[in-house]
Length: 86
Image (tube, rainbow, N blue to C red; front, side):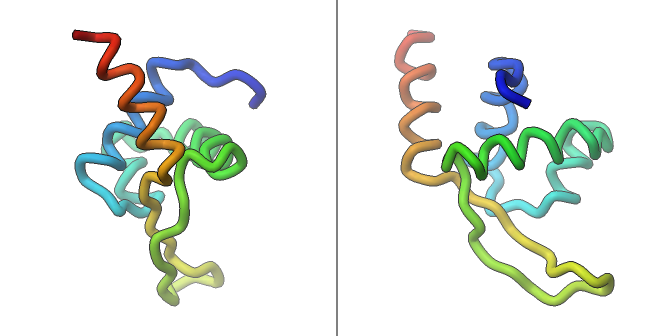
């Protein structure tokens, strides 16, 4: 995913900012269980350092449960768009 939809990207970042730190599952529920969509955006955000892993806990499955929070770069991006709305 080279160029995600800006509106969806900002929406996901805003949700993490307002309600975070959040798990993948919590974000998926907020996006009407759009697991594939949330997965793609989380990978994009991690790769571009817009979010970071806040904590990891051993889950029931083979993978640890991770909570994500905005990084300083993610806060900066949201602030730019919030200023331009005014």
